[in-house]
Image 1 (cartoon, protein in one colour):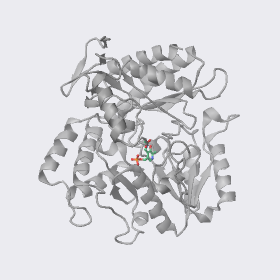
Image 2: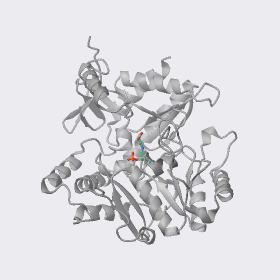
Image 3: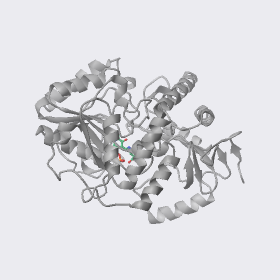
Image 4: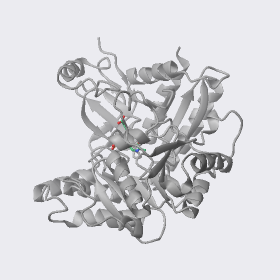
Length: 453
Ligand code: PLZ
């Protein structure tokens, strides 16, 4: 039986009606068929949040092989900030792909790579001399930031935080906090990685200011590692996979200041928070923090795999010639996508758009939390917001309720994601080009899902 649930009058973006429209159950028959093939051919270790197979996407919607049009509140995990198949990205990628697809930048270079590095120098916080190196994935960028910091300081130790997520490679698994599913059974992990307490306002037993939380972390690092052993402190300005944890104001600047006083490289992992997501181009800007190195990926290239480390020229240049690279790092097609994506970010004012999305979402979610005590916390910045589900009146995590609400949204054609150390955080990462009406409709669906039992 066909269950027809849809938006009223859809806007059309790039030929794609911006509407929620379900024409089959979720997942539909074609998706189920593909999923059976996936289960037979793809390793079980590669999980699936929602087994609808996508055929087209753009603006704020994902269209599946059964013709269902869903509202996208995930952006492919904070990647398609400029919209899926963004027309500028599509045009520039097609043009590049016809001229040449690969030379290896370390063998025979090309302008696109240099232009992306120039754009990064301009866009990242701080007006000091900056240089960049390009890679393929976020994890690879984080690994390289650590390599650079170690060479530049001649020190070994890497400090990360509770609830951190930095990737799935061996070193970045060591840096990531959560065992299941990211680390379980995959050790032994890289050494010289130390974990400090985070500022997580909702989970503090008593209110702790950002400065106090930073002093607490610094004391742990001082006592357990020793400041003069530390090459770098790596931190997400707002934690992503760990639960959209926004540290208390003052936390980041205090840590950054202490790093600078102790010759420690302060690395901001802006892989999830970057490229307009939080209402400024980079999340560090909200507190005027200027990182020594910044890692970026995801939102940089509108969906093509590209990542970078950008930072103080003297740190970046500490590495010997030939010490950084990789076959595909800064692939010309990915660079073309990045240049188009950056153009969209700037010309379409998408950081401002993220801020407006944040205002809408935070207001609606606060109303929802006032009605439903199982929503223990509403937090986030710009188009990176979340609700944390708890047993009412406590801070005890309720991951089952987060999963239930998320599944209920999926059934109604709204793609939501969960996250958090305790799996009880429902997060929202809409593309920054989502229409207001579509966003409002997604929030209506969420409201009904939250009210259900
Ligand atoms: N640093 C802050 O958010 C990637 C991971 C999804 P890669 N986050 C999504 C998953 O389950 O694998 C991420 C991040 C931060 C680093 C990374 C790693 O980026 O491009 O996935 O390697």
